[in-house]
Length: 158
Image 1 (cartoon, rainbow, N blue to C red):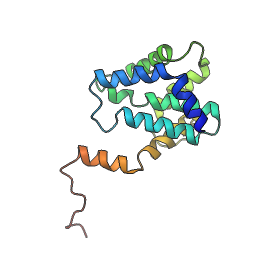
Image 2: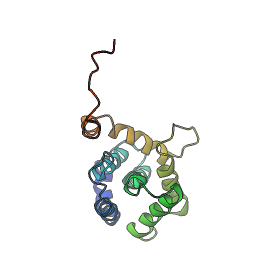
Image 3: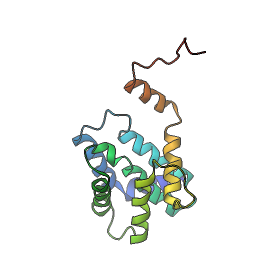
């Protein structure tokens, strides 16, 4: 899947730049769910996907999955419209069929929900990749950075 990752960087470079620029302009770069988190989830998604196609679609979904965090004042429908705009403006013309576009939108919409047997393969991959992105030391460093008043160990707790 390393080839998929390289191809995604090249094939979807405009999408990557659009998303990264929004993180910058919205000052969403210092939060726990920043561009690096989205990028890490995208890389995991392409590694664990069941096929190359699902890997590319999940990479796209992962890159845009925190749009609600970039634009916290947007409602859910506005966030999904923004994701659609990312896809329209950031992807090569005719890169996605309507069905695959809807699968990516659904994955972004549902990525924080519990697993559901009705989840499409892109959603399944995105959910799992997001979990992997939150397993490593990077997650704990982010948590400590944004929750400095919580004790790592509470000596009163038996």
